[in-house]
Length: 153
Image (cartoon, one colour):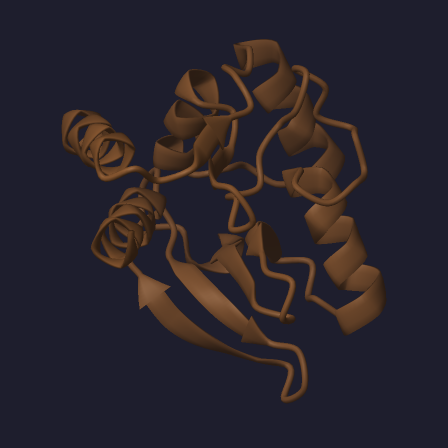
């Protein structure tokens, strides 16, 4: 699956997308993030963090681990976006933010729904406090994210 993702990233670059990546996160920083959030992360998200750290299209970045420091609590980091969404929107503890848009779009992994090493990505409606299924895995979400942006560039 990562091969397909790498190809989509190359297509996005070739299409002229303004992208950047935070840089790879160490195994230790990913484990520390899981400790801070009191949950495990799906394997596909862990692999993404190990390779890219987070990022993507400028202004529409996927949350990640910046500077190999999982406890940074500002926008653009998984920890910061999750803590902000919990305090501002009442995000439930089982949801971990992987994308926080400027227009109150909150996309999360739902750690209550693990199947093996993976769990789905859902959108969290900040007004209704309800979730909607988006993708079965983080990899599936990432492929959709990249494909949509390739088609927009």
